[in-house]
Length: 102
Image (cartoon, rainbow, N blue to C red; front, side):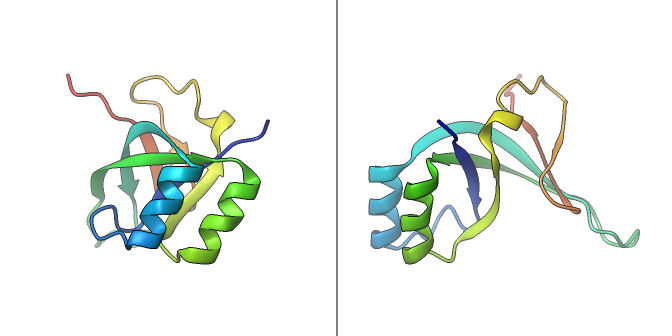
């Protein structure tokens, strides 16, 4: 079965409808370090910890109906076996790597 991973724009202020759909239709994936590398050299690189939510395609459609809070999405299989310090490019300026609290 194909799974799709998403990262939310805002993990803190989640409306109740969105929370219910996350709770019912998704599973929590890995903890990631999200890296934003802007194309401009004068802009700093931004990193933050974030959680991955995993959906099947039909459940993600339901989530799209109640939420505009998706920052990024990708095929879960592409990141399933990433090693520490390996990065995956989600978009031109967003990358993720596994978060490890050494």
